[in-house]
Amino acid sequence: MPEQHHEATPSPLVGVSYVMPVLNDASHVLEAVESILAQDYEGPVEVLIALGPSIDGTNELVADLAGRDARIHVLENAAGSTPAGLNLGIRAAVYPVVVRVDSHSKLPAHYARVAVEVLERTGADNVGGIMDARGITPFQQAVALAYTTKVGLGGGSFHVGGEEGPADTVYLGVFRREALLRVGLFDEGIKRGQDWELNRRLRADGGVVWFTPELAVTYRPRATLERLARQMFSTGLWRGELARRFPGASGIRYFVPPVMVVGVILGLVVGVLGLVQAALGATPWLLLGFAVPAVYLLFVLAATLLYARGHGVRTALWFLVVLPCIHVFWGAGFVPGYLALTSNIAEHTGR
Image (cartoon, rainbow, N blue to C red; front, side):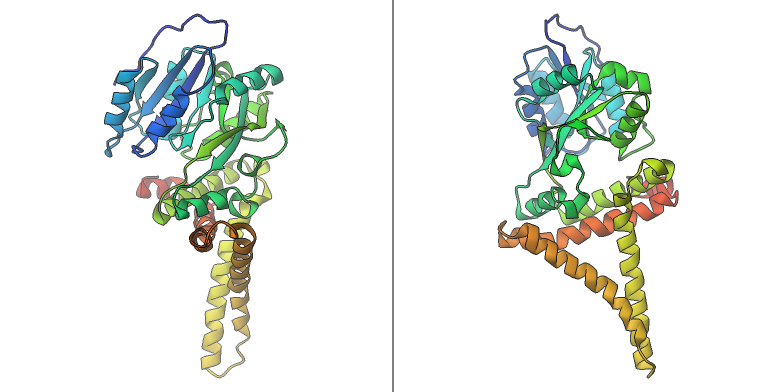
């Protein structure tokens, strides 16, 4: 589909361009678009959907949405990646405020109105809030619980909340388009974590990234353990890449999961060698290696009792599986990313 250009509608309120990359997400895109169209913002708006080469019916669904509402415009995102889709939408946007939307997200009705007010009040280049993960099935509820607790994804304000004010990064984001153009848009070579990297450049250029808990966006977690594992490995992979590229800008919390993974693996190996010692009649002091995975197991059990109690038995049982899945696959991805193996792995896995 050719890139569409259209005229802005005159209005006393600033115009808003919603930009949403979509790829193989027929199960969520309708809810995301409906949340955009239900906004109570009274200024002029447009919805730019950067559509990747999908094979699950997303193309037909998006085409139907565009056919029913003149505010929706579809852009062909041949590359299929999130940053490429975002850049397509930003370049095609006709309004000065760009709202980034994820196809897994559901915006509250006041989202654009509050974001524009905060942009004008603070002078920030980017305003964002909380990724309010909410699940439907017990599995998704367990993932959402892990996302929104400090033991899951590290406790950043855009996951667990916090006070309004300047921040390193925020979830999604409502941007001044001129600021995005000034710093060179999203880096299309970074497949995950591109928000953090862009916000780093905005701040380095003298801009302000502003967090406000008023902007809590409902996020639908992955629906299966396999999809969650793939997401976490890819996220960890690119976070390792970013930690290597920008060592001074990455907090110590990013290194906890990979250290845990390496520690557990080494502990298991040493423990197995202790079993060999015992079989040979030697003093099996290497069995102490099993203490490392045992301590991690106790940590998972304690976290489940602390955070999953009261959320139902099935959700709590899934939490026992989900939490190690997040830690292990995120940490396992971080190591090769940090060792500059990101491109090779991404090429062979399609991530």
